[in-house]
Image: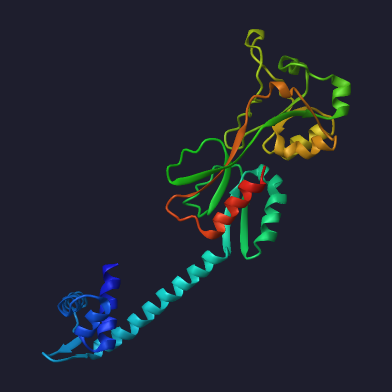
Length: 293
């Protein structure tokens, strides 16, 4: 910023052809302008002005440097105008990473795209723990705790789980009335792709009755296959409500053991702390928080 101030003093002095008038324009003394120009000349290793006791005249090197400085300030002005326009209306490209289950967010994201046609979204679906900063993402949507100090975070909303199966399945295998009854059922599990571990079913159960050991009948690293298998009557699964809410509403799946489901997960949106939350990302964050769950 000191360099910009020196360049500005030089341009004003060159255009005014006077250190005195330059000082009046910038609100400083003529001697302060003279010292600033002297330091700039020393740093550049060239003389910018010919001086005498009554006037100054720009040198050939100074004239060449003046044109370059004018272009610099024109670019700065253009950048400020562009940023001002960006602040007024969100636009541009945002790169967003979502979990594979985020495919089920597409109705919400589609509405966002319709509302903000000047924003181009680059969506990356993966359950891999991406490096937001190093991989150049503007934002990521994830569940679970946040441990990266380089990231800022906002909670988008909470979600709960439901144990679901088809009517046909429950007519053949019976409806479980307590978590321990699941030992006699065909249980479908979600497997974390990054670790290979199975996601725990968040069920409250009677400890005195022993450990809740669920059969492992099938597993998948994404949620859509588990929904399809459950719909086909081939098992039951414990899934986030936002992924099966419509299936329950229209009767394709039936929810059981609701009194024993004890957790509420959270969706969070994260972005690099080194960056201001730009208008386009602000718009995305707010829209997702208002409309996702």
